[in-house]
Structure formats: structure tokens, C-alpha cells
Image 1 (cartoon, one colour):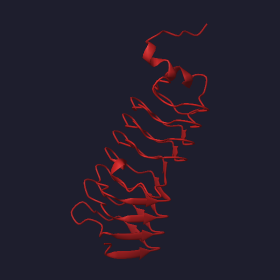
Image 2 (tube, one colour; image 1 turned 90 degrees about the vertical axis):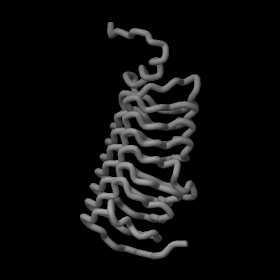
Image 3 (cartoon, one colour; image 1 turned 60 degrees about the vertical axis):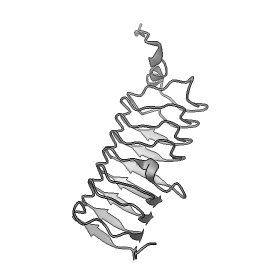
Image 4 (cartoon, rainbow, N blue to C red; image 1 turned 90 degrees about the horizontal axis):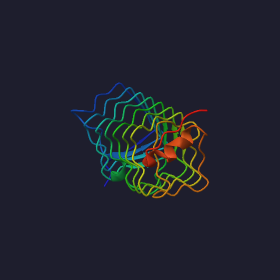
Length: 192
């Protein structure tokens, strides 16, 4: 049961580490420079909200709903998105740090990742159909039985994707980036 319904409000420079955000439904709200690190957003619903320059590292997302939610310039280390409510899940990330975060079995169709660092992120069994990784660092990100059909990775870099265990039909890669599809073979490719 949600305690609060909050609409069209801006929350600025609030530290939620000691006193968590009240459980409720937040619609068309903006969170600016807030610190949610090591706190909980469990059972909260966010619809058409923005998180700008917030720290959400290690934040707990137990059944949290994110419907058309955008994260800009946020630090989100070690976040487990598989704990979110899948119904209506719609996310967008721009200039974020998502290192060590997990999207295990999460449906992320049409999700946009722009200028985002996803080092050692977990995408096993995730559905990234039609997702876009624009200028994203995917160093040691894990793709295992991941659906990458029609996913745009043309400007992404440092990824290693095994085409034999991932679905990559119609995915887009740059010529140089496509070398990340051969990593498992441990071969040397030299420019002529």
C-alpha cells in the first residue's frame, strides 16, 4: 500500500541515506543532486520522473516501479535492476556510471544508454531488443544468453559478446567494434 501520492514536485539536494524517501507514487517529479546511496526505494512508483546528478549507488529497488524514468549524470554503482517491478519498466540513461550494476533477466527493450559507463555490468538473460548503446564503455560487461536483436552497438566500445550464446540477429556493430565478437577465440588481428 502506497502512503503518498506526489506529483510535479522538485526535490533538490536531499540526503536520503539516513531518512529514506517516503514510500509512495511519484509522478512527473524531478530529483536534483539527491543522495540515495545505500538507501531503499523499495515499493516506490516513479512515473515520468527525472533523476539528475543523483547518487543511487547500492540503492535497493525491491519492487520499485520505473515507468518512463530518465537518469542523467547519475552515479549508480552496484544497483540491481532485476529487483524492480517489470510491469511498464521504461528507463533511459545519459552520462551515468552504472559499473557493477545488474540487469539480470530484465526486459530492457528500446532502452537508451548514452555516454554511459557500464563496466562489469551484468546483462545475462536480459532482453535488449532495439536498445541503443551510444558511446558506452562496456568493459568486462557480461552478455550471456542475452537478446541483442536489432540492438545498436555501433559507437559502444570495449565489449566482448559471444555470438554463439547470445541472440544478435540484425544487431548493429561498427567495423572496429565487431572485433569484440571474436574475443573468445583469443586470436590476433593486425591492421595491414
